[in-house]
Length: 114
Image (tube, rainbow, N blue to C red; front, top):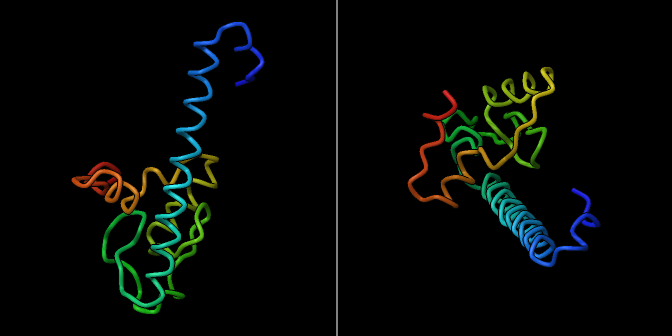
């Protein structure tokens, strides 16, 4: 959206910048979640951050590297990301299990994507 179209309406301009600020804050939270998870992956065996299943290899570097986040994911999700890229489908880490688990405590991601 072009912010210049809101110059004549103070309420519209406030709403636009409020939505923009929320988006920035949400991205910062998600980036923080991913950064912490990546660090923990080096020392702990964790489930895949994308699907939440225990499909990760014990050696974290033997797993797939995500195309959209700097973190390791299971091979199945790596294939899923490759297919999304091939089909030019846009998706976000907001749909990932780890993000949903932290932002929404009772989140069951895998049932939504299976």
